[in-house]
Image (cartoon, rainbow, N blue to C red):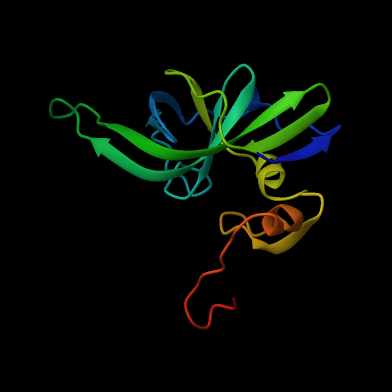
Length: 171
């Protein structure tokens, strides 16, 4: 596991952000969460959709994942609202230690049923995808083009890897 570490910085406190759901199941490298019903469909509101980065907050960390599927179950009777749920792939954790905040790949403390789900802030995404010492910028995030995506060259060259793609994509 490698860690991106940022000292003397703050990640936006989770308490200041709206909750988008709560965990209802966990299994292996995935989790499912029930979406909160807001009813707010204004253009400026952000919703959990496929491809969004989300975090499950616990007492010791934020487990980071990406939404891969959203489903809706109709209400039990006519006029009763349905419930929506989202599946997420878990891929790392953001932990705070003293004045340092670090992201590491892999999950050591899995989310518990009922824990809160939030959308990831731009600071958290920068921690996950940027700020790698010895890293090289390879592009930007599709979800937020202002955030550079980086790789650790030393770590990459110490392992087997392949570069794949169709003709013309710039391998």
